[in-house]
Image 1: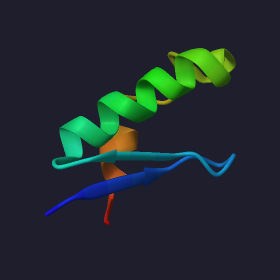
Image 2 (image 1 turned 90 degrees about the horizontal axis):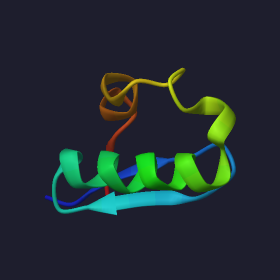
Image 3 (image 1 turned 90 degrees about the vertical axis):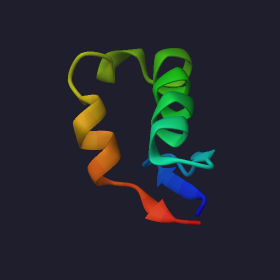
Length: 52
């Protein structure tokens, strides 16, 4: 089942798996929220995943 991770800014990281959604939101964080890189872990992101 598809997964989504919501950024505080409203961006949605989507993927067919939680790993894909986490990869998408990590790329978003690097480009739009570089101050969060290294502060929010992949495990944190995975814990935030919801069914799409």
